Image 1: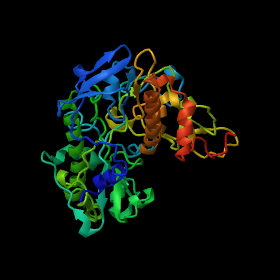
Image 2: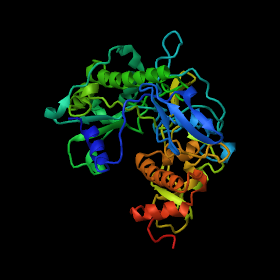
Image 3: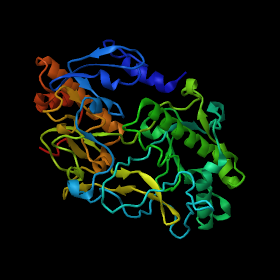
Image 4: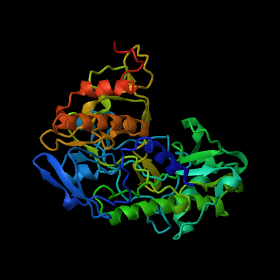
Length: 447
């Protein structure tokens, strides 16, 4: 039984009026038709089906409906000057998630060429813009219960020499003395979080993610270049390379005699969850796209807007995360490997605020420019800067924005297909509040 799929279908089964249509394939760019500022129809590749709608919601990680409809978007990093954001652009050296400065890792082969997973790209000017994205990965479901396990497996094109960077990093960590007697745990590189912390009643299953403190993790740094504007083939290649990297990373830790025995044995306690995605060798089929393209409108949400305790009159969702930006690239500082672009900071807050890390998100974040597209709503690839997106990019935030997007679409249709920008946000807020959604925190904070 595929537990993840069953959970999703159980939710949908509560709403018999929703028709779930799967395996349609990607959108066909040249098939999209607009009349003025309104999207009329498009075709999907696998089904060859023509789709027509009064209102469209692009709730994908890719944002292709935004891109193909000639709605303004961007990707990568804005410069510090664009929105006057202190965390924007190319970053200076960051200790967290980086190689140890006192135990540097050589980024080259003996002939001077760069080893795998290190880019030859130059550093660039601090604060300057570029087109790099936060690193992608796959979030594996793993377990330490033997009877629930499917074994980790070697990817078809595995080559142990591709993981020389990982080995050199292991050697540097051992040399630092942080783990005496080579007792280097598997969790030094990854962060397996038990699902029970997210409210799941099933114990002993873990969500495998890269550890932010580690320089080399399951985060596939440098492998997502070309994804946004890529063809379907390009994206399949990037997805496969990312999968191969993660499985190869684990296989190297499990099997290489150069890895400390303690580390190998620590990882051997785990395996893939055999009740998850059996049709895909128990690997999640969904590439974890931490950041794709981002909508651009006249009210881009920036670092200056993320303030705990700041009250708004057009709030449709609450965010509750810090600035958490994973590395966007790995380069060489002379001949030493260096991760660049990551930052981890608490958000600003109004003096005396009791809101904790909670900040309010306005309705404009999901709406395109009125003079471009007037029947499209974008809850995932929403209008935020690279910096702000690091705090709004979590699935719970997407769910809240998605709920608001649904109401915007419904009210637009119910009012003779008015532009989504003309929907009264107060109607949406009232509907959300009736659903039990908090628009301020604490609930009476802004009264």
